[in-house]
Amino acid sequence: MKDDSSGLPFYVECNGSGNWYTQEQLVLATTITNTAETAIKIGSHVSVRPGVTPKHNWGSVKPNSVGVVKSLNSDGVGCTVDFPEQSGWNGVLSEMMLASTSKKNEEVSALSPIS
Image 1 (cartoon, helix red, strand yellow):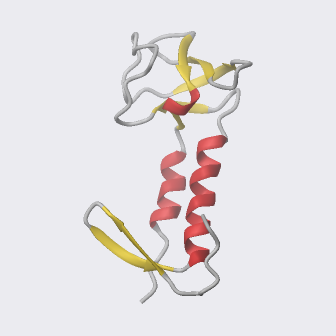
Image 2 (cartoon, rainbow, N blue to C red):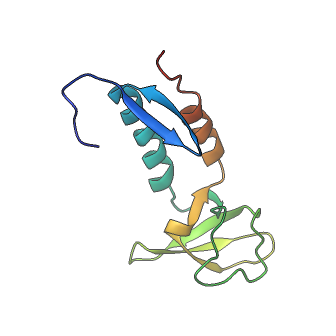
């Protein structure tokens, strides 16, 4: 986000509705979102992001399945996840989300627009 020294609020529209937010609120929302996306590590509980068709296919894994990351590829792109339906499932990190990400999204949603 580019710094806005004017101090004026930003109008943010999403899915047909919008609100005014301060720069500090937007930076907080971005920080929460980026932390959730970059925190996947070995042992994390993950699922495939909604609306994603995995590059390496679903196999026996279902869209609502939650698995445990067993390894991260040295290229920083891939991972291996043990799901209840399939052990050793190969995935792409950008297609995954932390199973607890919904809690992070609730924090972003809880930001109150300015009046």
